[in-house]
Length: 324
Ligand SMILES: Cc1cc2nc3c(=O)[nH]c(=O)nc-3n(C[C@H](O)[C@H](O)[C@H](O)COP(=O)(O)O)c2cc1C
Image (cartoon, rainbow, N blue to C red; front, side, top):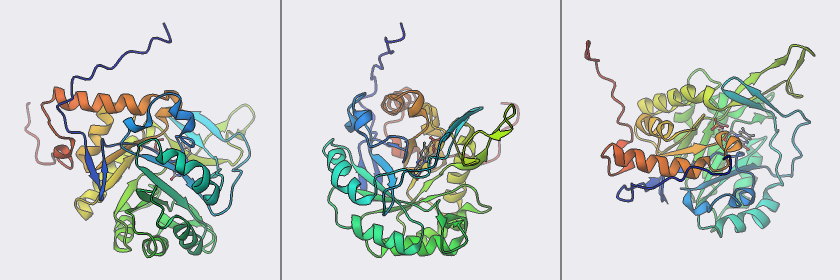
């Protein structure tokens, strides 16, 4: 029966799922990935949003954006390509209409801002400053910098530092820099963000990809290239979290990329993530995030772990014992 969803019986009420994400207390480590949860209203039809650790909102820009022309999505093996183009109502409309509703759902809201220049990041920070409904701010710097030949901010250390410093000088909530994996040395970019005042990192945004329809010989996306997400990118995300943890120590991190199962969450936590986001999985199953919350609690219970925080960064890297 397709409508008879399997009930998740919690056997794990003795497990402490709470985490401190750079000063923000979350009831569990599961958050939504920016842009994969619409405004939140659509998802509230499926489950009580307060079951999540936090909602990370869709990135907002200074002005409303209609996004890119269709087709804007294409399925790939183990993943999905999208070129939505940051469609959003603009920061002012989001602050007036979506944010108050979201905050009233009893879940911490992490706002996300995206700019095209350092000055736009500064203006966006001024708009959100002091808003009591915003628990933390994610700064999406995986965006083209119009003042620098369209090169993505997070592809180089100086523009990363400039965008993050512009924001951290203004806001007084924790700031998470959201980085692109399309770089040679993600630890160097993460370090530049933290030195510029970021509380932590959100790792990773989509990878730039492309797919071609062999019958029409056209790119499957109207924009030709787009962001690759889903299970195919999880190893890249785990690697990024691991490299940043190894280079910077226990900096607060939101692990993002291809999360589908409770074990995926545990994997990110072992690599060093404090919170873990569910993105593309929500498009296939709107209940993915709350099911993963229950699944992580059950996993901890089954493994005799009392506290999710106790697992963080406990990756074993020593020599393997041969023959076992
Ligand atoms: C349709 C779609 C829209 C997205 N929009 C945003 C966005 O507005 N801001 C942002 O920082 N990331 C955005 N992302 C990236 C996701 O937040 C996430 O980093 C990425 O999809 C990897 O996670 P996943 O594999 O779980 O989807 C978007 C991803 C998708 C698939």
